Image (cartoon, rainbow over all chains, first blue to last red):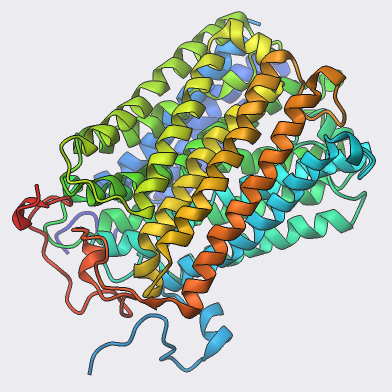
Length: 95
Length: 534
């Protein structure tokens, strides 16, 4: 199994537990930020939620161990989402 | 012993059971064709009734509330059950694997599951008519806040659209994987027939945009059931957010509908010009460009909604840009005919009709992309006319052209060409009477979705309604001819049009699993030169 795209990799439980703890900490941070007003809460959501989703994608959904094609597909999807956000803010921010 | 045709049952199940459990991509394509044709004629019938209501003598045919339900139903059925699955579901399923030299799609069982999602969504949509508060009256766009507050059965109808979305996404995943993984040896990206490029670009839009409408429709249900307030200003929500989310999907959905049709036209033009297509790479890449830029123009549906002026300008600019790749395609199709040895056959007639009608639809679209014009024609019959020129004149006639082109291959039967020519005339005349009248009515100020109209619009409404009768007559003649061919038609040749792409190397109808041996590709798809025809 020399092809990295098809090689089966089993990350240790330690990695999963560390990621889980990180996710819990980020959730705690999000809840804390929500007490500092709407603007802080929204920015917190915008920054931390993608970070959390990224951790889930990268470790739990094994994106880290995938080939460049699948990573590219995910990047295209995320890029599209970012463009959608930017265009939405072209309305909301200037209304 | 030769391999039997895909139409022959060779498995343990026979007849209807064999069809309903098939994983053969060709049979699944035909399952879509059958279901979609039924939905199409249902929605055509509703359209005819809507036109009748605009005649003075039939004004009391239905109530105003029923009229609202009719235009909603017409839109939902046509959009979600005919044009969105459209050519991709029927001809994409049937021909994508064949055109790239594969035996089937990557996930045959998932393919069948997609069809079942499609049928389940359709059944839910029909159920929504007769349950709860009755048929939805919101229009096919389900705009909030009305869709949140109306007592009609919006929740089930949007859930039906949600389920249909799964069918679309799963088909998209299947087609992308098939295109990446199952191309025959030597079938490089730029040796793929252009129909494959159309289906491939469409599949990306299906995957990227459909989840957004799915979530949005779930939010509508949550609003209706729990009143969460995401679209309600009284609770800090934003009704324009609904419009954004709806059109982020529903404008690219227009390209889901039209791109495979453009792909089919790109197959037809070189076959009947007997020469390679003009600007292969430009057409292929313009499919990707349309899918990409077309996903960024959604808010041109919202210029009068109260969106920011800055956003209006951005989206107007992007709308102008998306016209460029469409124009490239039209230019290249027409240029393909130049110095070609034109063989005028029914598929070419319908393909040329597509180009003519789509050009009118596209140009009226560019007119609306200009902010000042848009303010004038917004929510008028001009929009309805434009939309039908693109969707019916474009996707519809593209569908008919593709059906005429591939019918002999799909069924192994040939239709009466004279009867098809005869059906074209009332279709073409009726279509233009119907929808060009709408363009003029819109410029005169006739609002869309109105139950009745002012006397000054009478004449054009009569013209449009008479046009609808011609159009329906042509449609009945067209499908009648094909049905007759199906049961009483003569045996079609394997290559009746002199095509050079892979499907024409197969028997008519093709055998199960398409190829006895996977072919090796050594040249581009429109290689007429070797026969000295170029």
